[in-house]
Amino acid sequence: MPSEFSRIHYEEVTSTNDLCKEEHKKSSTITVITADKQTQGRGRSNKAWASPKGNVSFSFGFTSSGLIDGLSVKAGLTVAKTISKSLRRPVQLKWPNDLIFESKKVGGILVEAENVEEKFILVIGIGINFSIVPKEGHWGDLNIDNYELKEKFISELIKNLLKDIVDDPSPDWHREWNEYCVHLNQEVELENNEAYVFKGVNNLGRMIGEKSSQTYEISESSLKVKGLY
Ligand code: BTN
Image 1 (cartoon, rainbow, N blue to C red):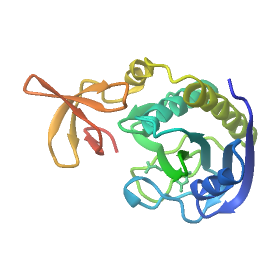
Image 2: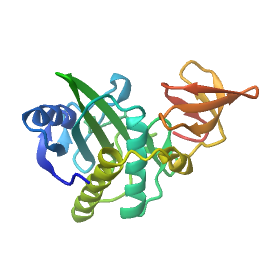
Image 3: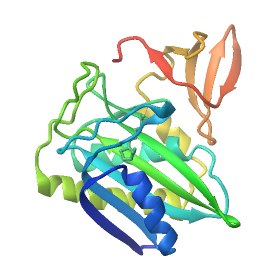
Image 4: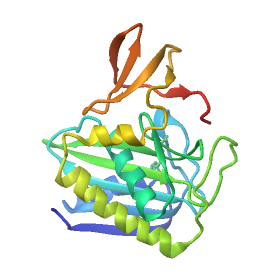
């Protein structure tokens, strides 16, 4: 297992994903960037991501020979497992990669890739609301305001990302993802308003939806799920 990585922590950055990409270009070592606060944090679909002090802003960058199917979905599983085990908060997953606690979104993942010569720099950006609930009412937090616990969690997360993502892409990870899913076998609605019963993800991280006894593979969308934020 490759255990070498370098980590730099900042009080304030624009986006940890940007710094991670830049830092990783300088050395081939796996790069971890963390920050107390981001001023230009970004989420999926070009949305701004609020990152006040107290939360976790974390990016993990590595080089790969190609893009990795389902990387953000798979990384979500690693984050949910790490939170559940090391922080004792039973976090669940909403496809594709929202972290849910007590029916509210407490975190998300943004994977970005940059092609450099024959290879790709892949950056897994992870934002988790530890103790600050941003203004919008649908957001939640883990209600943890403890520096040592946060540092212990970050160490575990790095170890688990090295194991699950860089070291061993287990072909069966999606079965475990389905166990963590908050809406398995429930009706979900895609961005285009089509409704399906969510039957799980496959090993490419794609959603398997069922409609009128037919199954469909869906690779990209956000979901609306009854009872969730
Ligand atoms: C989402 O929209 O759900 C994904 C949010 C991802 C936010 C994280 S915080 C660390 C990293 N830096 C960013 O600018 N975004 C990601």
